[in-house]
Amino acid sequence: MDLWLVGTSSHGILTIWRDFDSVGGFREFEILDQFNTVLLEESFSILYHTTKTQKTWGFRSDSLIMSKLMPLPEDIPFFLAPFLPTSSSSLTPKRPFTTLTYAQSLDSRIAASPGQRTSISHLETKTMTHYLRSKHDGILIGSGTVLADDPGLNCRYTENGESHGIRPIILDPSIKWDYKGSKLEQLVQKGEGLPPWIITREVGSDELSEAALERQEYLKKHGGKFLHVISQKDGTLKWSDVLNKLSEEGIRSVMIEGGAKIINDLLANSEELVDSVIITIGPVFLGSQGVQVSPSSEVRMKDVAWWSGIQDSVVCGRLS
Ligand SMILES: NC(=O)C1=CN([C@@H]2O[C@H](COP(=O)(O)OP(=O)(O)OC[C@H]3O[C@@H](n4cnc5c(N)ncnc54)[C@H](OP(=O)(O)O)[C@@H]3O)[C@@H](O)[C@H]2O)C=CC1
Ligand SMILES: Nc1nc(O)c(N)c(N[C@@H]2O[C@H](COP(=O)(O)O)[C@@H](O)[C@H]2O)n1
Image (cartoon, rainbow, N blue to C red; front, side):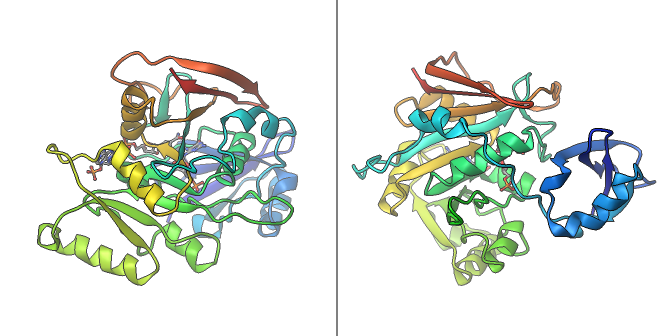
């Protein structure tokens, strides 16, 4: 369990840091998030009163309930509209409408180091991400991301009080990730998320490790599903096959969030598979140890539009 430190700045913004080395107290801090204090949930109120007096306070991560999202900036729906799936998207069953979307630093990194969950987006653009989730049937990430981030992959944006169930889809060909005990499982148990689908390569059960078979059984028992795709000679899966499989399963739109391997592959090779690209850019340099987005060759975007908010900018476009 991590220790957390909370403090307010003079202009009333609550900042949450995570103890970096977990030993010897708070020596180095990773700034996790900044919340406008009025947006905090009830459970934060004690912390809020404590921090209001400029004191700091340590608490345990299991008592950290995520803040509510911010109100969505009014101009965001209009700005994003040309890049979103519509009700007539993907009526042809070949593949879903596919949005590639992620948050990056100024030096094109999506995490501070491999395997480290790193907050780049401001609460405002995080809210935009949840709005995007509300417009898609599925959200896809790779095994590297699920293992590093233990993400929630649900949609917390509500419209007229209605919530949207988005299907978490994980490209995990060798079933490395364990659903048991994950944040995703906790959300499903609370009725705040859907059980995930796992895309694996089509192999006989004798080719899977004992641990992978156990993970598979557990998830199947708890509402998850495995989608098998025939791999190429090098063991990788063709994106057209992956998307085709999702389409067969009724997914009409999917947002692909990462990580780096997946983003780099799709940017380099898949202009005919990706309909929109939506990138949040946060004002931070994550440094040369960071996980880099940089496709193997030049890629240009067309139909480009920019939006700027409190802290971040967002660029949307299509691959040319
Ligand atoms: N800032 C942001 O918006 C985001 C940041 N991230 C960060 O990205 C990092 C993870 O990135 P990365 O390590 O590159 O991992 P990825 O999430 O891209 O997963 C890579 C793995 O996915 C599987 N995979 C990918 N493509 C294929 C394919 N075509 N066929 C078969 N399997 C495939 C492979 O799994 P296997 O090895 O099991 O065969 C591969 O090793 C994390 O630190 C995370 O925090 C992630 C998403 C968004
Ligand atoms: N939009 C965005 N901004 C960041 O700063 C991020 N680090 C990410 N990461 C992606 O979001 C997933 C986490 O989602 P939950 O909030 O846990 O549902 C993570 O797995 C990355 O795909 N995104």
